[in-house]
Image (cartoon, rainbow, N blue to C red; front, side, top):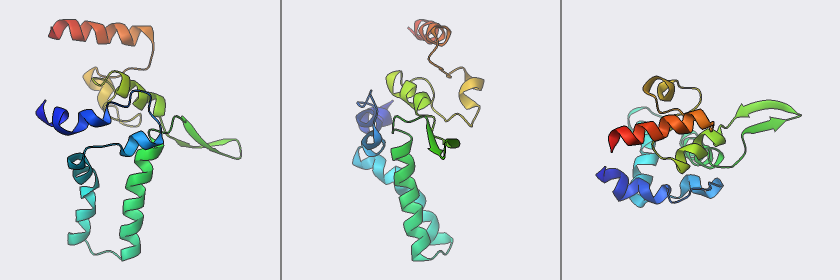
Amino acid sequence: GPLYRLAHALHHRNVNVGPWSGLSMHPVEHILFFSSILVHLVVPASPVHILFHMQHQALTAATSHSGFENLLVRDRRQLALGTFHHQMHHRYFEVNYGNLEMPWDKWFGTFHDGTADAHERLKDRRQRRA
């Protein structure tokens, strides 16, 4: 749609994602992405909390594009980053809109796990739209 072409297409030029891809956005998208900070106009918070909020926004974008599937501490899985899932979204932007913890993509038929079956489903969807 028009919003994708105006703003989000710049972010999707990054097909092989890396940490900087997470914050590679059009200025309009940056305004939307960081707009959650506006909640602090309604809900009082300390300036330190607001700084942590902004830092979380930026670091989450970087880690979800980092190229690492999990963050390991002492050889134990601590945090699932799910970057393969998001990398598939960058390669085929009509799949994997959400994250692995939310079932939306599976429910709406936009889940792609990198298998040949998932790719065939994607091709079928594209042909039906054409």
